[in-house]
Image (cartoon, rainbow, N blue to C red; front, side):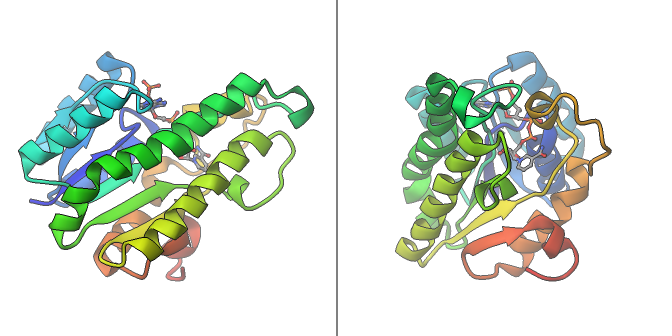
Length: 232
Ligand SMILES: NC(=O)c1ccc[n+]([C@@H]2O[C@H](COP(=O)([O-])OP(=O)(O)OC[C@H]3O[C@@H](n4cnc5c(N)ncnc54)[C@H](OP(=O)(O)O)[C@@H]3O)[C@@H](O)[C@H]2O)c1
């Protein structure tokens, strides 16, 4: 069975991806900071008959990252690493003139530094996989200038660039930065609490991620809505 590490997998897109991968026979190592919610999600995945290891912790904690990779090694290795856990930097989001610098530091720490650190930790196992892949979860805020999304967007732009360079440096891997599009999740509600327009569910974009894993296109940046329509 292939093995995936998914960060931020207790709810939202991470949980939906975990369900999608479990349904396709993947063994999983999952993390999130809130142990009870993570355990509940992991317990729900047992119905798929795959092996699921839940490792509660914060991706910014080096020891926790080592535990994630060690748990995957026990399941057989790392074939896929999904950097999905994310911080907004301010909740709700605020304009740059009011963005707390500590919030921006936290967004960079979670979204960029921890993501790279986990890649570094997992690289030997990803290279050994033969079909190793890294997915970094991006956002259209990385590419478009939306008021109040500046700090978070800057962190996602940095993550996109790391992914792009990693793809060049590791031709034996696939490295996909994926913009999932807007989704109805706690993160979106925390970012923009007054916006109650209906948004797609996280489960509705999972087929886009499964398509990448199935077709294994070149490393690069992909948009889930376009992947769902048959494009890139
Ligand atoms: N929702 C959208 O509209 C949207 C749009 C574009 C991109 N995205 C991206 O999609 C990804 C998933 O977001 P989502 O909307 O699904 O968010 P979500 O529903 O709030 O889920 C976030 C997950 O990450 C975990 N998490 C947060 N910080 C963590 C940390 N430091 N260490 C470990 N786990 C952590 C959370 O659990 P704990 O709180 O218990 O740790 C939770 O499991 C993110 O990368 C986000 O930037 C979302």
